[in-house]
Every structure is written in structure tokens, then in C-alpha cells.
Image 1 (tube, rainbow, N blue to C red):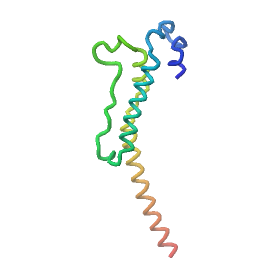
Image 2 (image 1 turned 180 degrees about the vertical axis):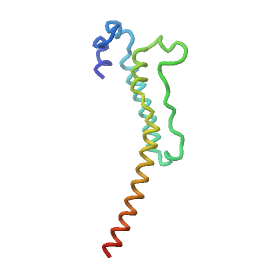
Image 3 (image 1 turned 135 degrees about the horizontal axis):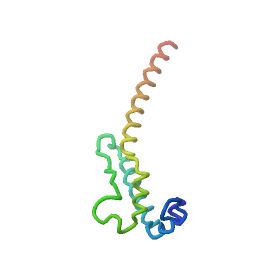
Image 4 (image 1 turned 135 degrees about the vertical axis):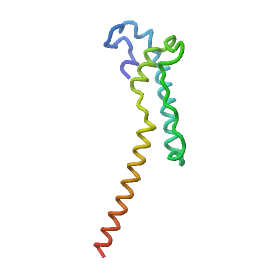
Length: 112
């Protein structure tokens, strides 16, 4: 966020050019769109069986550098494929619930 708020603070080479290479509002809007789409998938009751949204690369394709090239690069650098992470969390949660239920049954058997 500090880089987007004042691109001139970019510590690398070409920092003075950064204000011309970053569209802060466009970058934030693209990031928001990405996470809104992801959250809609996560919150859907059938997300475990439905294909996740495609994680796109912003700094690719013909002419991508014509508008917001630094902002697109920032999005790609921070672009973890959260769909894979969420799918793995779902799997681990299922395993945890199964283990918890088995432990509960064993403890109830000992209690009785």
C-alpha cells in the first residue's frame, strides 16, 4: 500500500519514473476484483465441488506494459494462487473433523 500511495518512494532503480508506471486506483481495483471473485467462490455452498476462479497473470499478453506496468507487476509478485491454499485448508479441516469425532467417540466410551 505505501508504494501504491506514493510510487515515488519505490526503493529500486527508476523510482522517479514509478508515478508514471503505477495507477494506484487501477491496481487496487484489480486486486479487489480478484479477491471478491475468490470470496464469492469460497462462500458458495458448493465451492468444494466447483472449479475455483482462474488466477490470472496481469503482466502478460501483448501490450500489457502500455498501462500500469508497475502495478500489474506488483499484483503478480503478490499473486499466490489462493484457490489451491483454500482447497488444502478444506482437506485439512475435513481430516481434523474426522479425527475430532473419532477422539470424541473414544473419550465417551472411556467415560461410560
